[in-house]
Image 1 (cartoon, helix red, strand yellow):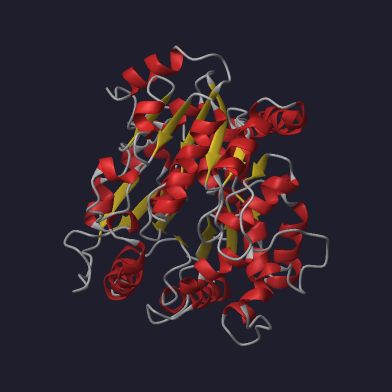
Image 2 (spheres, rainbow, N blue to C red):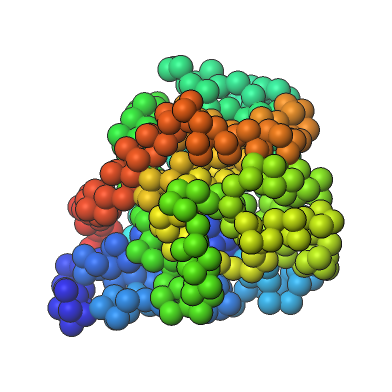
Length: 475
């Protein structure tokens, strides 16, 4: 469809939708993908974020650019934040609370923008607990778009629990079993070490807890949109809509990016990576990527490295240091490791074109932290998973992936989360080559048909857009 015809469709009865994600690119990119799906149907988008985040967005396709306005709100600087820090990728984990404090300072400029632009809909994230009253005052209907799975939302609980009015879970151990409001059999719960590591999300360091933020936006929105398809977790969708929230909960599809966020089309980094992968046998390479926002400890890096060495598989490891780290690259890995695996393994300390790597036929297993976005990318290529969850919802995702036989979790100590090189090597061998691991390989191949089905995900996005059209702001 030509941009001219799309732009002309934006006149008349077409919607104007304001989109406002949290300041993490794991949120910003799915919000951006959803914005593109809405614009493809001729509606106008105002995508609102801070100046530096807007500059870091992928380039818009030419036919959608006339319909998506990129709106920059000046970010209120917090004295404890580094200069130019506007996203979680810019700060070490312990500083995210200051990012949330500054984010909360966007309430007044965003209210002004909403008042002057009078949109038909506002699509927002979990963080702006102050936003629903502003939207209600201006008569703007709200959709909370959740980038997590419906099962994670279900585990977190009803609105009263999220707001702290009625939460029976007062001890870390209470989060290691399915909660009382889940009426069907489920293994979705945290391990003890996961909830202990995540305890900062339950504390009001930024003024309010993340649960309170989530509860406030769910309470104040008109509809909840979830990044999934209903058949993947039908019981959880029913639980949310009929019992926990008592409002519409709509799947918008998986929103897989068409490419690696548009950045690797002519990326010179891809050429040597492709050449190296091309020298490896089909399905023999382990691809490892665990992000940088919840970094491994020195001991964990060592055990993971020695486990890769012990496995004897070729591997490509994207090992990112946390923001603000002063550690030299040479100090990150065990002594002599790179020399011992030379030719068989690559350690990349910079950004890498992940979708292209996962799509290469030499990659046989993805060792992942279980972030939903990254798993969507891997399963779209039929790549089975070895699971090493680190933070927030990743442990809950991990239980679901194991239940569906999409991947195998590396064995860990229940209390401190430590793991051994042997458990790493054993997990890789099982999923990659053992007869017992055919279950995981077959399931990944089967789910590829769904995760890689762009038409299916486009239909889900279309159904959500139809809801927005039918329930628009009264004129």
